[in-house]
Amino acid sequence: MKTIIIYNSQTGFTEQYANWIAKALDCPSKSLKQTTAAELSNYDRVIFGGWIMGDKIMGLDKLCQMTSPSAVFAVGSTPAYEEVVEKIRNLNQLEQVPLFYMEGGFRLERLGFLQRTLLKTLKKATAKKENRSRQEEFMLQNLGESFDNSDEKQIEELVKYLEE
Image 1 (spheres, rainbow, N blue to C red):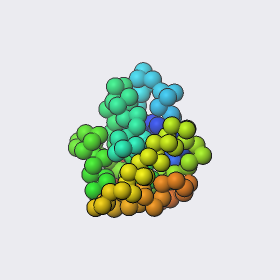
Image 2 (spheres, rainbow, N blue to C red):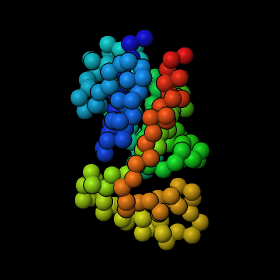
Image 3 (tube, rainbow, N blue to C red):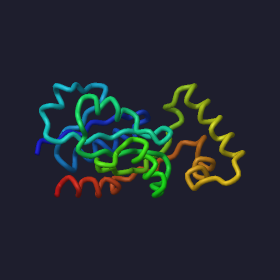
Image 4 (cartoon, one colour):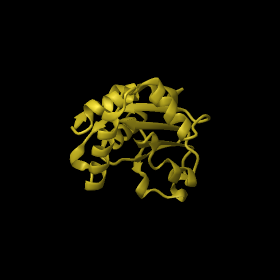
C-alpha cells in the first residue's frame, strides 16, 4: 500500500514522530501546510499526526476536508493516561479511526507571546482548583518549563498496526 505520513507540528515533537514513523515504514512524511488534496489522492493510506491543544488534535479538521485518515497519532505533553486518550478520541470524533497517543514534551522557547501568556493563566487557574485530575497535576508541575519525553519506541504500536 502506498502510504504517506502527514503532520501538523508546532514545536517539533509531532514532526519528529512523523519522521520516525516514515523511516520505519519507508514512506514519505510531509507537513500539512505543504499538502494538497490532489497530492493525497495518490496514496492508499494517509496517516495523520497532530499536536494537542485542549484535547483537540490540531490540523485534523483541515486534513479531513481533504481526505479520511487511515490512522491518527496525537502528540501531547502529558503522559498517556487512559482518561486523556479517551477525551482526545471523543472530542476529535475518532471512534472509527485508530488513534495512537505519543508523549512529546514542551518547548517554551518555540511558543509565541500569546501562547505563553495563556499557559501562565491556565497554570494559575489549575493551581486554584481543589480536586485536580492526574492531567491537571502533571500540567501544574510541568507547565512553564521545557522538557522532552519523546521516545522513538512510542511509534512501535502504530508501526505494527500499519504493517499488519
